[in-house]
Image (tube, rainbow, N blue to C red; front, top):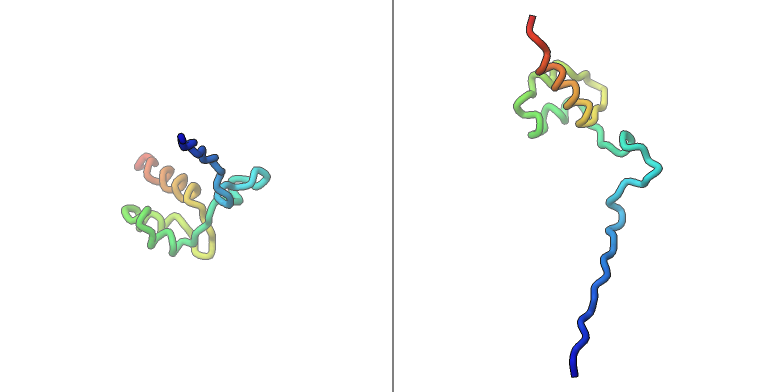
Length: 77
C-alpha cells in the first residue's frame, strides 16, 4: 500500500501583528532619555542623545533617529 503524503496547512501566527485599526505611532515602543543613552543602538552618539533629549519625556526610536539625523547633518557655522 502506498502512503499518502500529509499536507501541512500554513497558519498565520497570532498575536504578532498590530491590529489594523491601531495607528502605527501608537504601537511603537517609547523610551526614556536614560534608556536611550544606555542603549547599544545609540552608543556612538550618547553625548548627542543626552543633549538633544529631555528628562521626563518619552521618545520612539523613529523620533530619536530623526532628531539625531537633523543634528548630525546640520551645517557648522
